[in-house]
Amino acid sequence: MPATVTLGVIGSDAHVVGITILEQALSAAGFEVHNLGVQSSQEEFAESAAAHDADAVLVSSLYGHAEQDCRGFHETLRDHDVDSVTYIGGNLAVGQDDFAETRETFREMGFDRVFDSETSPEEAIRALERDCSHSERDTERVTA
View 1 (cartoon, rainbow, N blue to C red):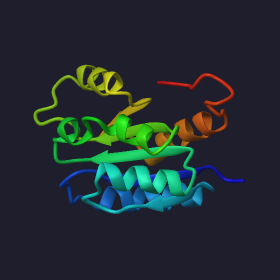
View 2: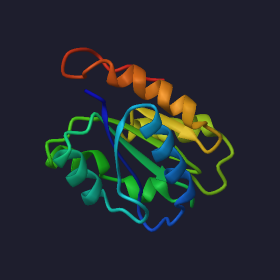
View 3: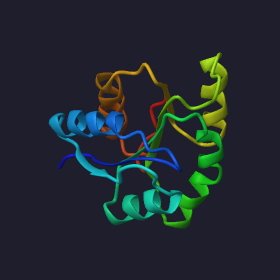
View 4: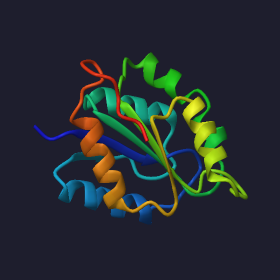
């Protein structure tokens, strides 16, 4: 059974090209993908992940306001009984100079993996294959 992924662009961000490419790459790699599209709310991510029993939730943001858009994100997932591995990627902060600092911010917010805008779909796929081959319910998550 293929791993199931909920994917979307959070908040007011309307950048669609990246998630369209990612959706196609993930589908070609054998994942079942539910693409929410752009300008998706935390609630929409949680509802989709719950409805499809998602193994992973992938959040994209390119307009630099991801920190504001993702405050409370993991609480929203928990409110919907979603226990999926969570990824976030893109241009996550305005004037993002030190990505290590940005990565730490999002890890503290609860994201398992944090990727910059230079991450290739292949890198995300490899990470998902590793993370989805282990159920968090059975083993510790793999984080990078």
